[in-house]
Length: 422
Image (cartoon, rainbow, N blue to C red):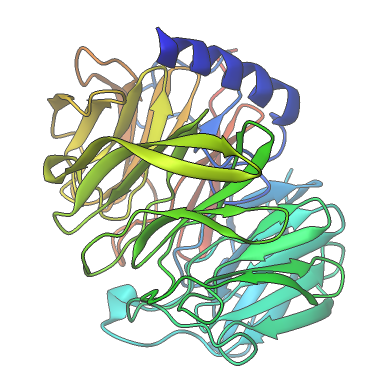
């Protein structure tokens, strides 16, 4: 009952602040991976929903899409129309998919085997500015109108940042009021707040012994009268006081290969999950007075709930997402950590999950996109299709639902589908 009440409260908050015609950062404005759209298709015809348009020019990469102000933004290496293979911040017209502009951000990320190379961070849009973090650690602020760069910072050179793994920066920065919050990583400046207009440092948080930045994006929570930023790094989750950057709590984990999924925050609860057999746990944030917040462990890490990089979503009282990167979606009861079901879908390989209108949009690594009922009783697919152009590289990009349309990125291509139940 307590979880249900929090669901109703958060739904009311989301409905007042989330817009159905925008998705301004990774996992949407609330960073939940759940779109506010209603009246969507409850099943798909054979071959998938109607394709409205297809465009080229996103470049090589796994960055998802930010949508705001009539434009689509993403990062990619060597996009169509560019004369080189460097990384670019690119924008498209939302209605037609036609390219609007391309702005070079620097060299492409070519470290490691080919499937792990290229862009991975989703831009964040705030009014007339768009912010992008490259895999190299360069933070760029540009005009949404034409891509002109206004300022830039280097998370490594300027703040002594470091990654906890060798796969480059992936975070989508948070804009909160007049501040930009991001995660250089390491114990010098684990998390920093910058003035969003100038890039000047406002405060920094130092976590002793921090292994370095992971891949998650910061989520805002409110505990009593204290605003708390919840983030994860290679050392596990932590809570930071938004007003001044004070480290309020941390939940250390043993070293693992990488810590990737963005945490799920509902009311005072924090669902932390990562892969490589580490698993998931549920924490409760508790206000203790004088601006302080502590955590209580509701249950510790359960290795069978691990999710490597496809992310998880919360609908009602249940968490949905892949099992590690096996292409085996599962449903977990939030308050108990009990797995209700695991089932192989029509696709193969790691599954990235977005949700809307009581359904899951599951993007499998082999390019299969499935529509699945968000039902704790069983896994039920009500449609699937193979996204055109998939197969050359892993399909790891999270799909986006905005204003009755489904947007999918497959490397250089963007595809827009009509998913309204007309």
